[in-house]
Length: 223
Image (cartoon, rainbow, N blue to C red; front, side, top):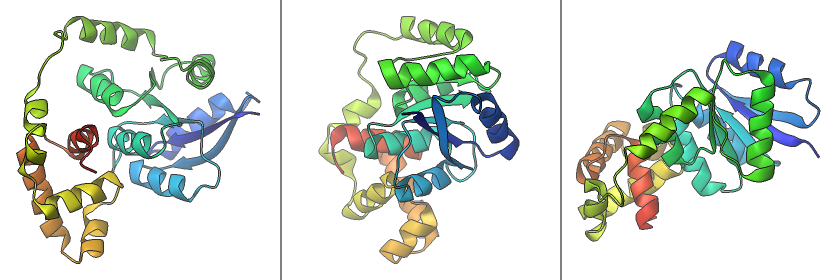
């Protein structure tokens, strides 16, 4: 049985480049592709057969790769995610790993390197990385203090950080992958009102984006 693959990238030429690299390998079958994180989550939900491994870009419109990995790993824990990007920034590597990525490769990596990474995460639960990414990750790990207590963790331990019932309700919809418009339609409020509630959620949790808020909510099992 081939390893089933999904490719997520907002640029058609990038998706085609990846497909060209994989097409000659009979051990891999591409079952669908998506143009951004939201498109991926919608197609994943509808797919009768789920991918084993997803090759995920990071910077995309509507929903980026880190957000979609965070949401998808919670809903489909058996799926492995390999980031395939041009970015080598420390914060992106760290956020991708925290979100649930099993590997981190650069788009310039060779076809055989990408195929080996797919096999590694699927067959051996490996953590494949491009050499330059592996070096940066090692540096990050060396600089992390033992058992750090973050402001987010301290805050999260106190009464759901003071979130209102409506804010918890909106947070649940954010975890499901809905955008502000879809959340507003379900809860019969305007997208602007949803955005204001989201801003209050971020402020109360002391975070800056949806991914960080979702991570705290899942860790604390509020949803």
